[in-house]
Length: 416
Image (cartoon, rainbow, N blue to C red; front, side, top):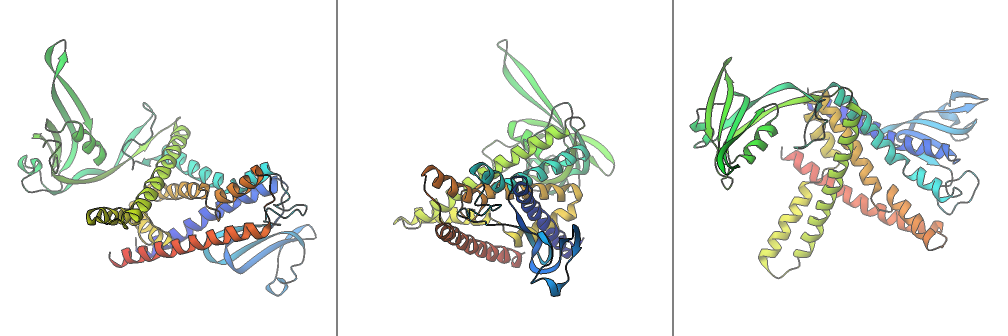
């Protein structure tokens, strides 16, 4: 499948996720008595819009857009495929007009602001539940499963793509294309009633991580590997390198499996969503730590400290990807890998959108809620001018960061 198709699918999926986020705000606003003036799919300029006229939904001709006949909510389909929006009446917290966001009480504002976040988590939960039922990829080494209700289904067998010269794999006679089936580890122990005993572990190799993790646990030991070459199976013994070595087995391996559940699919979907959410927050924390630590170290007089700081800043920049990187790189790759991988990426991005909007940044949902909360605790009125000043400045910072990330994405694409 071409990169262009992946980019188109990526834009469509991102638009759907942002629209789902805005739809969460929309539902919460309507439920809590706040009027929504316009709900838009994509960003203006407008392409088509509808409004109730005489109690019936009607398409409004372009020449009537300025006067906009009818009353209540306007639903619009717009030209720029970069998201969506939910325009509420009186979005400033200082607005006290009936039916406005500002007139809603604190609890209702909280529900409305976090409605989009909940919508993104809900989308991720639904996708991950369906994937758990039909077959979910595993990208985390300890990805959440329910023991006894998880079956691995091979999509691409785990095989050797490259053998390192002088490695244990080469010494055992492995070649490119060999399919790894099974591994048996036998470690001599000395804890069985004060006499030496043998503790064995056997694994079916369904994922590269299965084999890599088991090798890490048995570094320096002998492993019996069942493999297939030209349709014939054979077994060979390999002594792994010690843990301090550059590599243990000495071969690049690839392949994948999907994991299916039955009755536990909703539990697996929810557990995986929570796990990815935790990893996302952990990643954000690591990114910020590297960024600020790198900045501080850059003003140190010690050259080695400055070098460490430069490496931390590089790590931070390499771990960030914006819409260009997601659409231009990730979606084409995951689209080519198949539907389960593509929708796993969609769920991952939906969770990321939820996590980012929870952060206490004034231009985002979590930041607006924090601002309202602080002024409520201080028992002070949050004026429209103060709110706009804080939010606009934070928004400018986000725009600058987005431009920087976009430039980095373009440079990465150019270097591919």
